[in-house]
Length: 430
Image (cartoon, rainbow, N blue to C red):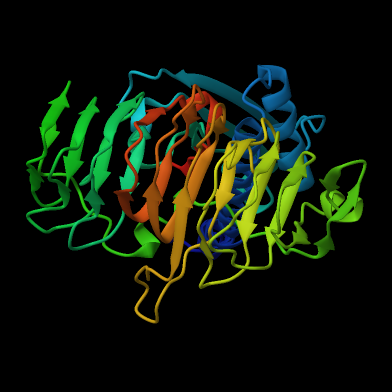
């Protein structure tokens, strides 16, 4: 008898193996795409979570770890990753960046905030291959460097922004005594900081883009004379130093012997319009000057005041005796430390124009001037104080020069003057 081998059943084996391969491809296509989609969604959620947590820290540097964690968890939850859902796990790590680190500019402190999202999703076709679930993990880290409040133009007491010519001219008969900050001249000319004649200048330092020609009677620079200062090439390069220009929607009123701001304008952080005329005493507030007095024969007094010039061709010249100017800037609010603000005038090329003039005087038996003079498009002529009054000011102008014979004593204290906020740095670093 003959036995005959048969191949019955081999096709079934091949079909089974093919089915496994088919399910494997299906697992790769379907489960793989689900994993990829979930991972991409989780990465977006982690990125937005660290940015939200970093922003919360930037807005409140005193926020606790629990506060940062709650913000990050809340943002991840809003994107579909609920910590209560056991298939997802969200962890938050916060690392302090010390001031001495190179991770933040200008020796600022900060925080690195890391969010990790671990997701577990049930498998579909991958179960055939023994995988009941698939786990993915994503991470994101944000870096937030704190903002700080600091004096503009490196805390120099006298700042002259003209790009050429004699930006600072101390010529004449006065004795300049500058304390608390030096002289900065943005001019690239060889006589950017200049003096001649009988004048005397005493200052902590002089910094210029170009050169110095200090040939007056006596010059005492206690620190350094830097002739290689970095220039401000146009208005955009210095715009961060200046506050916004108010809307000037209100109208000041006179009552009880004082000019007072429009209460509605104060609430809206807008200035109250007023014209200078004669002796004027001002209650605390923000005032927008509508006229251009000169020569001005009155005396201006007020505590907690900011005067903003509305005219691009503003000119103000004091001409008289007595307390010509005796005023102090606000100690809080958007214009903290700003006493006089002549908003910048910029040409079509983005360069500052000199279209304004201001005589800064504190003459008489007593007259304090406390607060910053922001006049980047003005020629500011400084006159001394024949009495015991103090000029605690930072003068920022297009050109600065001197007039009269009285001593010019500037005792600049940054805490009493304007400071600008540096921008917050918030980035995703990984």
